[in-house]
Image (cartoon, rainbow, N blue to C red):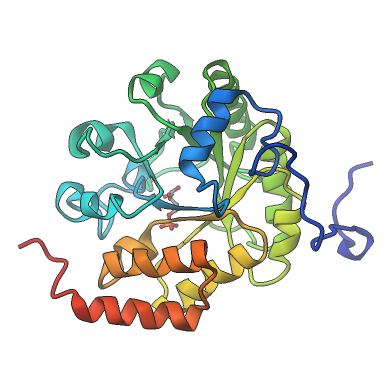
Length: 299
Ligand code: R5P
């Protein structure tokens, strides 16, 4: 009979006992091959075990998103402050200088636009092109509970298989449909399915209640997606809570590139993620860096 996860009380997540990672710093990665570990070590800082990934792939289904209208002018300068950059191959080839020595996490799914059913995705990149672009990870959306759930899960398993062939980790992004409840129970389900079926990194959303059960029950690193733009102190608090509750960093987009001073926001998020800075201190840092920044407008 299916375990419907109805009684959380009956489950034991042992949130206070970190999973052992013999011989490697990242959860669940000890048995991976050298190339895979080397790529993961470019994305995640081996000293802190965490990453600040800049997500700028939104255009693959929603076009020129606010803040991403001109990647070349306003976003490329931000990339130098990130640990890794998540983007599409089109933006990488057209707008990012190949001298950027940052690990690339390449979006490999696509199909429907915001005008259609988003879960109806297909794989949209050949693994050979990802290798040609020297990426450090490949990524796609997984729509657990979505209309095309099985298709998106199979997209993921195919991508994982291709990545394993060449030592490239796959990051599964747990997508949330319009009418879906965003709670720990749902994200435990979605993250665990993605890890069980082979993803080496999971990107998911923060939930205020029981997020530590989401990270504890997922045997691979979780990075927190930022979600829609919220006030700076709230975004810094959310990032702080996520890493305190077991996330291995963040993969943030709108809360960085839509902020008043994205470079200052990037530094504040970095302080939270890599130095465990308290949100109030990180907000002070943001304000002081913002004061020093005349304008981020290139014109
Ligand atoms: C979906 O558009 C992408 O996977 C984004 O990379 C993801 O939503 C993270 O960006 P944000 O922090 O803006 O939610």
